[in-house]
Structures are given as structure tokens and as C-alpha cells.
Image 1 (spheres, rainbow, N blue to C red):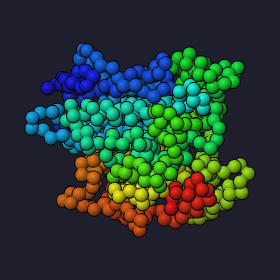
Image 2 (image 1 turned 90 degrees about the vertical axis):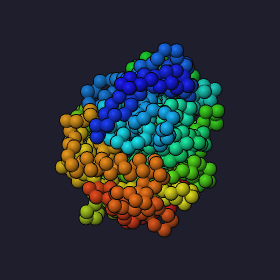
Image 3 (image 1 turned 60 degrees about the vertical axis):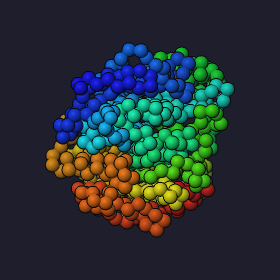
Amino acid sequence: MDSPVVTVSEGRLRGCQSDNLDGEKFYSFLGIPYAQPPIGELRFKAPEVVKAWNDIKDATRNPNQCIQRNDVTNIIEGSEDCLYLNVYTKSLPSDNSDLKPVMVWIHGGGFIMGSNNTKLYGPEHLMIEDIVLVCVNFRLGFLGHLFFNDTSLNIYGNAGLKDQQLALEWIQRNIKNFNGDPDNVTIFGESSGSASVHYHITSSRARGLFHKAILQSGCSFCPWARVDEKKYHNFAVELAQIMNNNVKTEEEALEVLMKLSAEDLYLSQEKFILKYGRIGKICPNIEKPNPTAIIPNSPDELIVSGKYNQVPMLIGFTNSEGLLYEIYQQKELRKGLTPINYFGVENCIHPHLHLTETDPKRQVIIDKLKKTYFDKANINKYMLTTDYYYIAPIMGAAKLHAKTSPEPVYLFNISLDAGLNYCKRLNNLTHLAGTCHADELGYLFNISSADDYLQKGPTEILAVRRLVKLWTNFAKYVNPTPEGNDLNVTWKPIDEENLYFLDIGEELALDNNPVPERMKIWKEIFQLSPDTKYYLQ
């Protein structure tokens, strides 16, 4: 069946066949619409269910990605019409076939870039296992995250997250038609995609849409993952003023922004970022009450209350996430910009602490960070950015979930430094030790767009098989190392007494309590404010 046809609730789709890492066949269905195009009056709004079609829709080519600038060519690509998903399956329904576990990938990219394109997230590695894989596109940048304070305008924010939830609803309706089990859905993501997964865990509107979750290098506690709800923001007005200085009100801003082409809106967004920065501005926000709200309160409060989706979790980080900020600095220098000092301790005061510029606690934090990261041997600036942006909030989230949920929480640390370390090799950082943010993507996915930078030898193939086996075991059985597995390790979930973690390097090894001394400092810092008291207990 070279050109399989599948019928979903909205119409028929024609897919194609592909080959996995082992040369085995699987089916690909690319560019399936799951929502109406979010254009015209739907710009910035919550998505609406896709309308049915009559003819057989071609599902053999990569869909539009949300408009963004290509990080390599520097060309603006994509479209505002971007709400499509890809489905991959080894088998289609038949009388004697069992439904397969479903894994739903939510890509990263700082909430402003990324897509489900097969050149970036090729399914060939994951499809060596008998699962159904879904990769979702959603709105990015201000198209996916702009909100207005004036509730009469009906733009409350989090459109990108609402896109993801609508895709999960589509999966519930349709995944059986691809041999997927709607009652066994695992959502997984990396970086901002991982933070998105965390928001779905805490969102009551996502209840029943998924049953397990994997979080790679991100959560809602990270300093880049949420708008500071205690400050008054006029992002819509500031964005519109880039095009028209006379804009004073949000109503006027909306009128200006709705008239812009998608490309002009994106160019305005770039100018906004240059002027105001991106972190804490283009990202999810706590919403004012509205019928489509998915983040009604701060995630830590929702977790402490126990009123969230208590599902089995696999959560963790790479051992040198902070190398990413070396990449950011180098890119800013190449563009002729004055780079942000990401490694300065004064820039590592967590915004969720809600400290004023004159609060004496700021100096207390600066002194603690200097003493920990710059006054000791064997500590470097990459450890500071690794801990601040990733490890401390992720460790805190893992511990809080283990405390408030009866479901298992598995913690991991990726230390593998080999030929498929995606981000490190793409940016020529192989001379620096450690596993960079996003490096594990080259093992989970076939990133053909980076073939010139990546090396796939025996060490790498073995690492691919191990990581894919761990992730898919979790999706299949809840336990990533079930009894009788061939991985030669037993991965224990954490509890209040033991922070077991799996170190994923050239070998797999179970250990206890990663980076304990550094986390003591972050616990002290988070306890300085009532707004972060649950972040690392």
C-alpha cells in the first residue's frame, strides 16, 4: 500500500510510505489540518475546530510552519495558516491489529520558532518501535502568545497552547484510524515544548486528553516560561507603536495589528524583541477569567492544591544546558548587536521572585551566586546558566509532583556527548565539555537538515536505540525499564527521601540526588519569596 488512504472524522487523507532506521516500512500522513486557519478575525484568538472536506486530501508533504526566520538562511519562512499535524504509524487498522501507544511531540524553539518539519523532526528513529507518533505545529511568537488586558477585546493569550490542546482533542477523535490508542497518549516535548507539556499537566481543560508526560529541559517554573503576572503589561500597545507611534490604547493597537500582513507583524515582533527583550514577554500568561482559559492560576499553586492532571512523568535535563547561552552570545555578536550578559549573576535573579529593583534580597542572591559559581574551583559560568534556566526549576517541579501525586515521577540527566549531539555540533561547540540544551534531539529524531554536522557511528546508533527504548517503554508500560528489559538498568521513580535519577551517557547508570550542593543554594534563594516557596522544597 504505497499510497494509503485513511478516513478521519473530517474527511479522507492520502499518505505515503517511509523507511525507519532499520529499513522497515511505516506510513506517513503529513500536513493534516486540525483547526481552521487562524487568519482574519481568528488572529490571536483561540482556535476553532477544522471544517470537513470532500475530496481526498494529499497528506504527503510537510505543512506550513508558523511564520519565523530561518536560523541558518536568515530568511523569513512559514505562514499564519499553520495548524497542521503529522501522523506516523507502522500499521493501519485491521481486524486482528491491536491499538498502539500514541506519542505526541510538542517542539521547542523558545515559543518563537520551530516546526514539525520532517527535516528537523524526522520520525525514523522513534518508528523502530511499534507506536503511533504525532508531531504538532502551533502558533508561535505574538501570534501564539499576545494577550490584551481589555477583556472586551476577547484576546486572552495562550493561543499556541490552545492550539496544542485542540490537536489533542483531534487525536482523541481520530487516532484510532491510524491504529493509535486514544486511551494511551503520552505528550512529550523539549525546552519551550517541555514547558508547554507542563502547562497541559496543570490545565483542567486538558483532563483526559493524555495519560503520561515526558518533559525534556523545561517546565513552567523556568524563568523564561511565563509572563510576570504581577506587573502590568502593555505588550499589544508597545508592539503596535513600532508601526504607529500614535497608538495609545489596546483598542487602537488591535486595529493596527489586525491590518498588518503576517510578515509585517513578524518584523514588528523582531523590532519589539530588540527593544524590550523576549524572555517573560513572548510566552504563556496567567489568563483573566474567560471561556477558553487554560492557565487560570500559577502552576505551582495548582500543583500544591492537587487539582491537576496527575499522570506518570518522566522529567529531566542535560548536564550542561547553559552552553546554549554561549550560542546566543555568539549569534548576537555576529549580528553586530551588544550581547546580553547571560552569565552575569545580576541577570540570574528569577523573575517569579517578584523582587523590586531596590529590594535588598537582590544583593543577597547576587552574593550567594558569586560565592557558589565564581569563587570555587571546578565551577564555571555554564553551570550558572544551566542551573538558573533549567536544573533548579526542573528539580523543583519534579520534587513537587512526587510529593503531590501518587503517580511515578522518573528523573533523568543526559550526559551523552557524541556525534549526534545536535545543538552543540550545529554551533561548533565540540571543544566545550558537556551536553548542551537540545543535544538529545539528534538521538530521538533523524535531523536530516543537520546531516553535515552530525556523525552516526556505532556509539551513536546504540545511544539512539537506548533513548528510544526508554521513552517508548514509558509510553507503553509507564515503567521505562520494565522487568525483563534488555537495558541492564532498573530506573526507580523519585520519592520524598530519594532523588533517584538515570544518568544517560555512553552507559546507563542509576544514581541519587544530582548536583545536591548547588541545589541547596537555589532552595535558599527560592525561599526568599513567598511566590517561589514551592519551587524547590
